[in-house]
Image 1 (cartoon, rainbow, N blue to C red):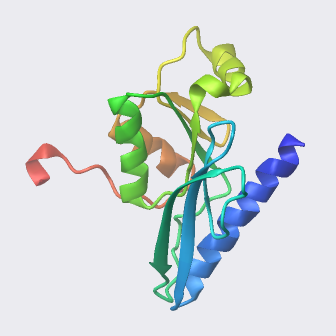
Image 2 (cartoon, helix red, strand yellow):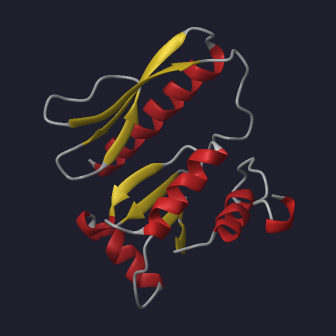
Amino acid sequence: MKLVAKLSLLSSLAAFTAICATQANAATLYKWVDSDGNISYQDQPPPEDAKLLEEREVKGSGAPLPGKVNNLPVVVYTVENCPNCEGAVLHLKKSGIPHIERALKDDRVAQSKILQTSNSITAPVIFIGNKILQSPGPQELTDQLKKAGYNIDDVPTKSSQ
């Protein structure tokens, strides 16, 4: 069942990206949280039991988004009141990297997988495919996204800002 849910989510994300990348007219993007605390971004309204967090009109430019979408999904596990978590999510958003944000405390499977490769869990935890990053800085996150094939600009240095 989990594989079906993951495939459904990936196909929804791919469909939304295709809509935004190929149509000049507006589409609606919905951000919602399900009963398990998972945050989803969809081009369809949320189910009745989900809480809508944001609804936004998105205009496609008609131009494709080369390299921003990759076969290795990016999943960010966050905890409440975590500046590093907020920074990582903001970095992904500013870079245009599609990602899924989930609450770490509610995902025992992810916790188990992380603990198989490390003795501790430090938030945020970011999965790029099967690669696990714990509390990466912006440059490490950028480097790993590039290694995974994402088209992402380098992090600006203080001297270039």
